Picture 1: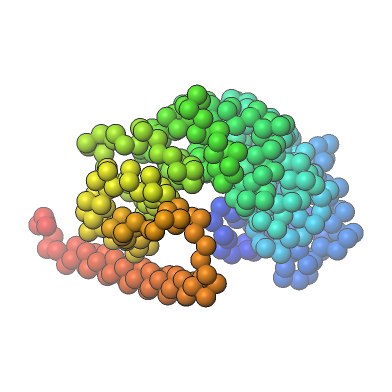
Picture 2: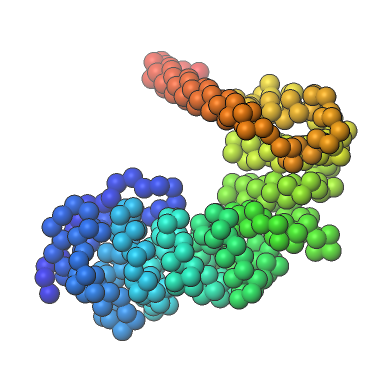
Length: 391
């Protein structure tokens, strides 16, 4: 066997990717990009180590090598072209060695974050049914990684359909996924927070929204408490995203109208923006606008706008206020989502949107600079404070 040598990490990765040093096993890799280095013979050699009956130390180095490959775009592209490699990774998630199984799951999370590999994972490997079986196990160690993979695979509408069908036809069904999500400590070894984004992604689809809004199932009522879940913004944001998507069907859960007087404003700006977008969707119809206006929304939003500091959230609030204070559209144009916009007007609106995004980006940059300056002044003041005196 050729000598082993370590390669440097692949540098900064997109959010959600796991970065590890890239260790190469038994193959000589002279160039700088790992994916380009592996020829057909070397690939087969590496694949030969990715089996359940390979010696555990050798197998561990092989899975670490593959995990390292998933840290770069070229590496993920290379692996995505090899269905045999993907199948080997899935098979090794059952390996008795926890370290080996963990590497494989992290590699699958990284691969699933790359949309160009989704079809290979969904149809070439049939990944989802295998993962769902493990998710049901309340003692399974890697259910959080499974939730991350399912969330990644369901982001795009096309592959979201595949994930939803697998859940409904070959898996436990969406009702069971909701049960798991809403059952505290279903699996005491993990958190399962990323089931929230999965539910949000699935409600891109009308079939999933229909399930969520089925009054006999009371799914919305079960999810509502998690809009105030303090322990995880991922779980909280997933539920808010789910409710926002359900608002495409212009139906507001009655429970949302009766929040306690001590309700605090949402701390996460991304979630605040989703909440505003949800209300905006409700105002797409005449009945929706009437209902939102009757809840004194304008006054609440006016005070919220004074408080809000994040430019993109403030812009979303302004758009909503504009809808509420505008005159009602003329007959035949009451549903704003169904209004046909002339082509020349579409171009103008697109240009306005681009200008607004540029303005928001500039305001964000200024806001970050101001915050950095405030922190620096605070640090300087503490350094200059006379010893023994309280400020």
